[in-house]
Image (cartoon, rainbow, N blue to C red; front, side, top):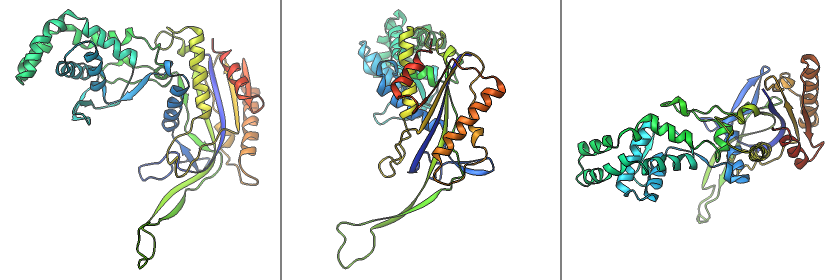
Length: 379
């Protein structure tokens, strides 16, 4: 398997990048001590959003429960009356997923789980349905049934629309769109429980970010002043506590370059287009940071060290064992973390014969040169 590995050391000051159900920063025990932790899901969302900012035309996937709302708009754009468009969209969404009993803020049903689809996939579904003679023939009956609020007649009209609303036909239309505009779906994957043929295995792999050292959560006591409080009163208008931590993290991400180029992922793209997707993904992976408490505990930093490796065979290997014995504080953690990371990589390369076709690091070279080097080895 040809793949890219990114090994990142990043120090983050007072922050709560990723919180648990008790509103506390997430932690994990590794090497017998508690570490600060940021889940892969949390960092992936930040990376996905930044990738879309860098390269919007190739990152048009949206993860949402408002599938009916989106499809309805696509149908209305093609001349289908709104009430009919909602009914058809509900039937399609219930085939792909399962409708929820709850509605969104404009009164349209949601689906029960988040679905990850791109604009091209929605448009493909809409085109197939809007151009179907079965659908066109049943629209009048469906419109009448909706006006009379006749559920039985509505079901009959939808049934007459025939195979175009069946599972196989809908799935076929989605697959026909490919993922040319959806690098995010190819990179981060999609799971569809109702139809596994629509599932897309993620080409990227992430570990949970862990601190390279022992880390304890701390408590911030805060007080807020009431601006209009009378002089006769004393004390704060409100008090409370928030938990935070600070840490130097080891982050690991990898990308299966062979998978990214296959027909189920970005095989329909040109080599240059795939290079653009990889470039946006790598840059976002290095620069993005979860947005939790970004206004009150701004933890935005950039990595102090990045090691990029491209290998032609084998599987991605992370270097977290460099920190199984936690680093002790002396004059900070970052310098020692970089030293231990380099030592671990050299040891694994020597012991296991790991061979790389690309091996560069930041800050030894600049960001642009690093990205140019990575994308030159994508194909």
